[in-house]
Image (cartoon, rainbow over all chains, first blue to last red; front, side):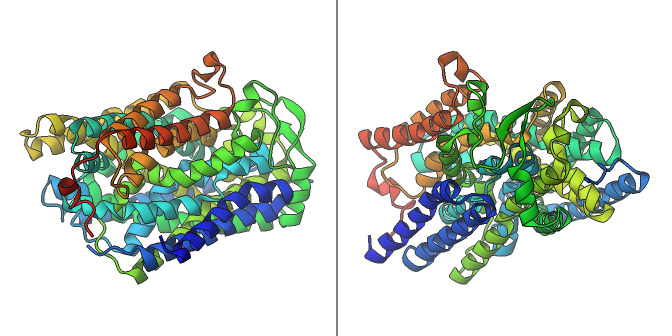
Length: 58
Length: 520
C-alpha cells in the first residue's frame, strides 16, 4: 500500500474517531453539524482513494 | 407562548391527498413506461444495465432514506434531544459513500450472471448453501425493517387526513403491491430516482423552515437544554436533554443507544456498515452501467446532498421539542407519540409544505417497502426455488415472484396492526445493526477480499442472526444482555471476527476460479 493511501486512510479514520470526541467535548449544534462535516470529509477522502489509486476498469 | 398544535382541516386533507395522488401518478407513469422495456425476467430483475450515475445515485438515496430517516429522525430528537441524534445518522454520508466504493463492484457479478445479492454470493463462493442462507437471512431482517415503513406512512395519513391509523395501512399495502408488480427493477430504479430527488429537496426545505419557524438555532439549543426526558405515555423525569448522552435508568434504559458513549460509538459503526449491509442498497448497483471517474464524483455529490437529508429531519424534531415541549409524549398521541413531531411541525409551517412532506414520507416508505418486498420475493424464487430447481421456467419464476410479494407485504402489515413500535427509528435500528454486521462483511468485503471463504461467510450470517434475537428488547434480557451498545458491538464485531478468522482458517476457492472475480 502506498504511503499516500495510508495517509488518506489515517485521515479518514481520524474523522470517525472525532465523532464521539466532538460530542463529549463540544456538544450542541456545533457537534450536530460537525458530525455531518466529518462525514463529508471522510467521504471525499474515500472517493479520492478509490478514483486515484484503486480505479477499476471493466 | 407556544403556538397551538394544528389539527386536521379539509384544506390540509385535500392537499395531502392531491399531492400523494400526483406523486403516485408520476411514479406509476414512470414505472409503466419503463416496464414496457423489460423483455424477460432477467431484465425485469436488473434492467438493461444502462443506468447512469444520476439515476443510480438518487435511487441509492431513495432506498437509503426510509421512513426512519425522512420521518422517524424527528421523533428521535424530539423524544431524546441531542442524544437522539446518534440514531439520526448525522454521519450517514460516511456509510453511503462506503456503499458506493464497495458496492460498485456488483457490476462484475452481474456480468457473471448474478441477478440478486445472494446470487452474487453464490458466484463469489461457488456455494448454493451460502446463497440460500443469505436469502433466508435477508427475509428475516427485512421483514422487521418493513414494520417501520408502515408506521411512518400510517402516522402521516392519520395526522393529516384524520383517516384511522389501521385503514391507511391497508390502502398503502395495496399500493405497494401494485407499484412493484407493474414496475420491476427498471421501473423501481427510475421511480426511486425521482423519489430520491423529492425526498432530498423537501427534507432540506423542511429542516431549514423548521429552524427558522422555531426562532433559530440558538433559541432551539436553549430550549432543549432546559428540558427533561419524558417517556412515551407522559411519565416525566428529571433527566436533562441537553447532553449527547441520556442516562436513562437501568436496566430498561440501557436499551436506548444514546444512554452512554459505548452505545453512541456502536451507532457510529452501525452507520458506517449499514448502507453497505442493506441488500436493497447494493441492489441499486445491479443495473448500473460503466461510469467514469468524473461520474463517480457526481455520484458522491448526490450522496452528500441526499445523505444530509436525515440531518435536516433530525433538526425538525429539535425545533418541535423547543416549541411544544413534551406535548406529543402523552397518550393523546398514542401510538404515534414522538413520531408525530415532523408532520405536525410541517402542518404548523404551512399546508403546502405539509402536503409535500406527506408525499415524501409516503415516497420514502413506498420506495423502501417496494425495494425490500421485491428483494424478499426474489429471495424465495431465485435464491431458494431457482437455486435448488434450476429447471423451473422464467415465466413461472416471474409469476411466483409477483405472488410472493403478497405475504411479504402482509406480514409486516399485520405486525404494525397488532403492536406498533412507540418510536419507529429505535425499533428499525435493531434490524439495521444485524444487516450492517452481517452483510457489510459477507457481501461488501467479500467482493474485495480474495481470502474470504464460504465457511467464514456462513458463520458470520448464522452468528448475526442468533445475536439479532438477543436484542435487549427481544431475548437479550433473558441472558442479562440489557445494554444496546454492548449488544450491537458484540453482533457487528463478533460477525466480523468470525468472518475473518474462519475464512483464514479454511481453504478459499482455487486461484483459477477466483481469477474472473479478481482480475488484475
